[in-house]
Image 1 (cartoon, one colour):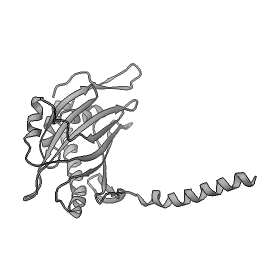
Image 2: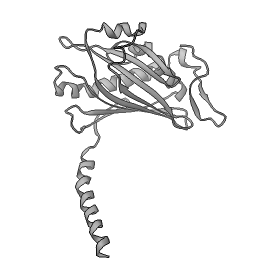
Image 3: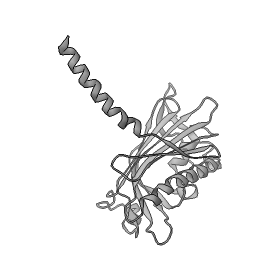
Image 4: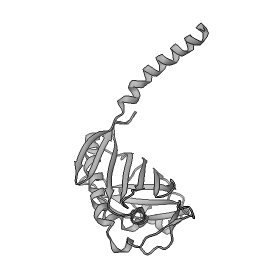
Length: 238
């Protein structure tokens, strides 16, 4: 019995030591306006916080994903995005894409070159995983990469995020966006952390208005016989 108790005591001590570290990372509500909530939390080994923004959109999941699928029109609703587009689509549910963000003078503009993958989670629920791919265009001769190669700002080298989307029983869609990025350059940490609240909030405010664009109203996602999402659309009209 003593041989059993001693390992249990060791495990208990280890658990109590780890518990404060787990509890220390908590979301803090920073802004709650117009049905959009923005949270931030500390990230280990980084002075830049992670943000979480969420809201419920009064449209079905199909329409929300159609807006996300229309990469070239991101500047029409995403905060501070000047140019965007698809670089390549290696798989049906995976894309390399870019977004050029405008920064206030005299700061350098930033570009995100990202790889995103859509992961269906059963009926009416998906996750989009995104990570930085800053060197994707380095050895690519794709015409779409020309804008990346000639970009005169800074390309963000570290970024990872996810969008979680779920259609609710009333036909609306709940969406959560979580992201952490290291913008690089000489941006002070306090300025970056300040932008982590208003930027995501403005983006979701723009998204809420933009999902009502007529071009997305007939969007229909591909589903199997059981209704589970397969990814992709039955017909693309945008």
